[in-house]
Amino acid sequence: MSATRPEDGPDHETAAGPEVDDTAAAAQAVVELLAVMRRLRAECPWKQEQTHRSLARYLLEETYETLDAIDEGAASGDHAHLGEELGDVLLQVVFHAVIAEERDDFDLADVARGITAKMRRRNPHVFADPATAEARDVPLDAAAVDELWQQAKAAERNAADDDPAAGLPPGLPALLYADKLLSRLEWAGRSVDVDPAGDLGERMLGLVVEARAAGIDAEQALRDAVRARF
Image (cartoon, rainbow, N blue to C red; front, side, top):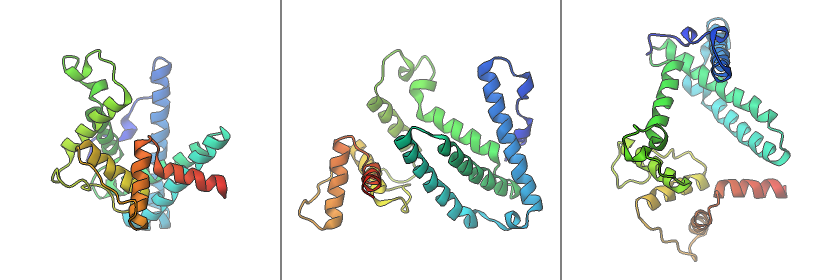
């Protein structure tokens, strides 16, 4: 666990320049949220009883409420509700981090450092050493960037290379699970043969294959169709 707590971060009033000033303000807001959660864990009986497992359902609920707010914002152009729901998700992140901190497992700073390091590893076209090929002044399109991302993820996986489902959460929505699995197979150069006369599940898999070929997110397309009709 980190020896330095997030409270030791930059002072908003001493920051110089608008970009640094905005960053300091965001950091201070997170520090305040962390302090609130620590106090709640110390003084609120319900918060004290919670564990990672007992909070799992709330993280799931807040995630789906955030997805709904994204759809609402896309339809209305007003994303204020999304900001509120992202706050609820952030609360869950901080709640779990404080529980882990109390157990000396990790803390919020460790969480932030971990995801920052991962973003640097998986985006070599942005963060690579200028002397490397990835950082040369060669324009990359979205497909090339995705290829670099997939290479980095494959290098990080501990499971055998021939297991395309390694690391995929089995609880993902079915269409999303199929899409991610197909993406890994495609990246590995493995084709998928779907029987158009097969059972319903086989035909649904075929629709995901069709959607990927057309550059369509099957999960989002189905959500949009249901919302539009009902």
